[in-house]
Length: 345
Image 1 (tube, rainbow, N blue to C red):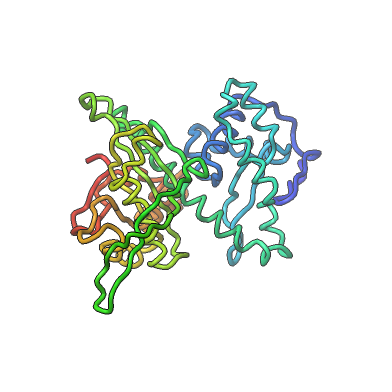
Image 2: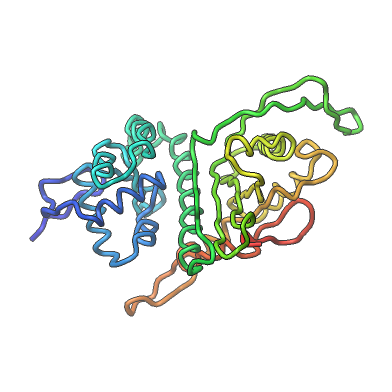
């Protein structure tokens, strides 16, 4: 009888021998692209038999090619979150034909230094609270990325996810006029300037093959908001987007695109989404008129669950897995009015 493998410590000597196969390479490649992937998203993206994918994840973890942790919670911890922290995994991808220049060696090195796997060691949890918040934010980005990819697959070629980028490669800065306001609350721009960071959480492009030339690509920035910042700081972030895109058109040079369709802001609950959307109408963001550049929605639409029957058993499954195409629906609202927008408009 096979000995039960430990959850949070590698145990390769008790692992059945298993070769590195094309499925193994596919799993490693997905984790490299997405940065942090829960088990459910790995199995959704790979397709095929879930048990076989789970065995590959188990083998790759215990042999040190991938690492994992689970978010602490009352009772049993949640599902495993996988990531790369060993350059040997990247070597496997290169041997399989991946372009070395496109692989995130720095990210893998950073993951190794951060030791995220120690989150599940009870004596370290208090020391790792900041990293825990970072990881929750990263998994939120991965969930959105997965919905885009799965929704495009379901579209039968009508829309394709042409590009998705995240992380430090997007970081920039933009110089804007300083603002001042009087006792009556009137805002005005000064001759002085200040520099704001422009650090979107992600940038992506949707491609529509059947559209006429010049209308085939729609470009978006994406922000994952977990309610950890003040409205003032959030509006400064939106102000940086507005000046970067509308006032200075920096995207034309930095991204080689003519137009950004929208800046998408997903936040964790309905009330906070409404608060941020209302606050985005403030003159500090875009002047006297609210900008239609910013689209807001709530994570609830993605995370709410529905009970289904699978293999004769009932279980609850979240919308982001059951109906990933919801990300394309008219669920996005701007500060201008109550019109709802779709990414496919």
